[in-house]
Length: 363
Length: 179
Image (cartoon, rainbow over all chains, first blue to last red; front, top):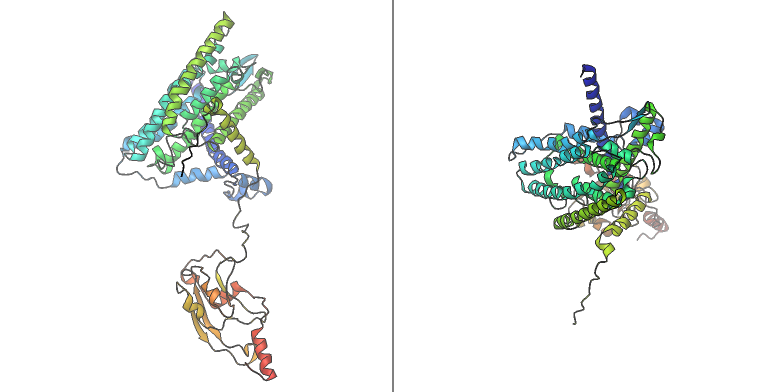
């Protein structure tokens, strides 16, 4: 491989990682704004950058929308004093935020987020077009639980410990139904004549006509609930349980390490939304039965397809936030019960039903 | 007393799946997004102060622009946290303040001590001290928050009452029957 290629790959990776982190910052803002709208409030609308904020119409509108707030929040988290309690295990205490952030940034590598048509050939826009894309995502994203376990254990304090224990048990429980719920999608994508393996790009291309969510609403629902649980979002907010565990696993964290946890949560949401979009919402295909191959060749079409994909991801992120401010949290035993006695059997039934359907179709 | 036992209705299948309930909850919150916000943008917008609000105690002037306070010190005595301090003073016998009995030379209210109970207003025989609608105080030092007479009058303004006590006293004296 030549040096130019390596530089080009690194540049792409940096662009995607930076975009993911900025989107997760914007998701924080979206969370604050949407929550305030739902609660009849206004949300952040004061923060302003001196020169840009005073541009007559645009500047004031940006201030009112709170668009400068992520900058202020990020700076605040960076510049605050970083207290490390005496009683923690320093090594794991420092490792935990990294371990929480790492899976989100890693899984984005195999997630295709657009297509480019060059010379009649459709090429995915993705950092690494792995054949085992979804396996890779599951393998890496389940490492995210280590961030929480390590934080909970290394903090050496009861609330983080409880939070860590709870969230790890929860994530392990829901990983099963998560994996089982998307198997039908891959059975569908791997029907005879459409040999696509576990590649995410081919799954998206398989949804040019019917979207996964239309053909398999059950799978979509199970997977959606599972990613809510995997990202520790309400109503599965066991890791934080702020009403009973102070702040759960990140109670002892402050400053930039807390910021990493915080950004990781939203990065996970974005990646989860991206995976859901790719698997069930037809990726970058504009509408059901309307393929993205209609888009123009070259960069313009690529930009359009990325735009469509991002729009769907944003809708999903909004849905995540919307759910959070609608539902109360489940009790811990209810979560376990739901996971093991409802989600898992339903996922198995779902798998068997679609297996039979496909057997009839193909047979 | 007989115990009435209320049977809880068993959940239907749809309710057990949570899904219809979640959907209706989502609709409610979605409707809320499009409702107007109820936030008061505080420093720019001020809340409407209801009548009879007990804000900061202030001193008022009568319609002639004279001090109403006659420094009887009842408020000073009644004040539970002892926030008020009055030094009575003599007034000029001539001119504007003629026929006015007395006036405070100094009148201080320590706003850090004041508990806004309103006893001073209640006890004042001259209706000179009023708890008005001002509610936000701030200062950089403790001394700054001990409000002096001029500050209290500035906050209080003029009370447009129709007693005209000192005018009546004056006209009564001119008619030859003081008191």
